[in-house]
Amino acid sequence: MSVRSMNNKLDNKIDTACRVLSQEASELYLSDQILEVSEAIITPLTFYREYVSKNIPLLIKGGTSQWPAMKKWSIPYFQKVLGDKEVTVAVTPNGYADAIAESHDFNGESIEYFVMPEERQMTMSQFLDHLENPQAGSVFYIQRQNSNFTEDFPELISDVPPDIPWATESFGKLPDAVNIWMGDERAVTSMHKDPYENIYCVISGEKDFLLHPPTDRPYIPYGKYPAAVYKESSPGQWKINPMNIDTPKVLQESESDNEESNLVPWIRVDPLHPDNTRYPKYKNTRTLRVKVQEGDMLYLPSLWFHHVRQSQACLALNYWYDMEYDIKYAYFKALETLCE
Image 1 (tube, helix red, strand yellow):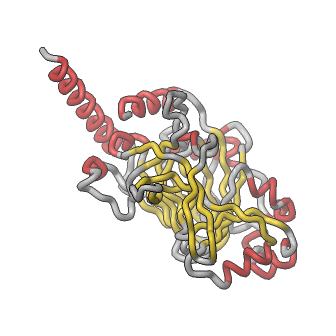
Image 2: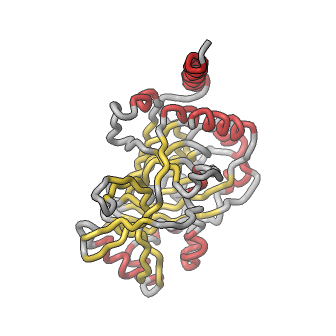
Image 3: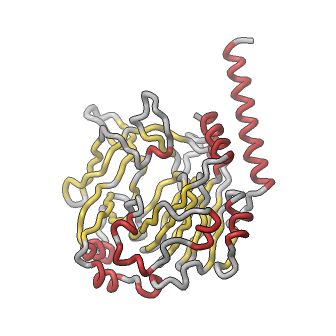
């Protein structure tokens, strides 16, 4: 048997194994829709047994309904409490921060970059003015992670719980980070995965999540891209400036240390408008959609692929709990390696 024949046979076996994995997951534990439960009846035991241990999402209705923030947080309140405070704001031409975008080199050749937002310092009052009076061609979004809520907004900490008690008991640890997200309907989070157990809480507005389970990894196309950052050269005129730096924020998607380690691995496909001709395997994914409304929480398990958008201005918090690096993680890394 030739080397080519052996490689083809191995590829066929891998494809078959991936199909079996996806089929078994669908038949054994994945539902066709996100399950819902009232926050009033959830317990640490049932949460862990029915959802965390199975690595399946859960919508918790009314999860934030008793938080002081639900009544207090508004533009007038933020103006009063935070108006003169300097905040870090992500600014992009299209609402896509940390996403793939196309530019051209000096020879006019098209090149795709992983583009991060331009980060600007401004007062909270200035940011709120941008939310109330949006500008065409410039989208402003508070989205800096690394626990930006606890680090940057101590004035608001008493308005929300420091953790989610039933989640903390289930995970056996406190959250690693609490992040705040604030922007208008143009803000979009491109599809990715995180090594965290995520409790996503909507304070006002709503969020639309598109999800794929980790077992869909064989059908989700990745590429590796040079890093770049948006820069507004004049009002409404944007450039993509290449960067030659490490990007630890996004390299959590891959721990590669080979010669391509300066490139950022990111998902190629836009799940809202997939190019099935270019990425035919993506049609094999199992897609779940859920709308997280004001006052609700979403438990998003670790390693689930997710794309997030909103149909109106939205304010949300999320609590990141570090995942357990156990047998599920080991199996996922093996699957990921087979797909590379």
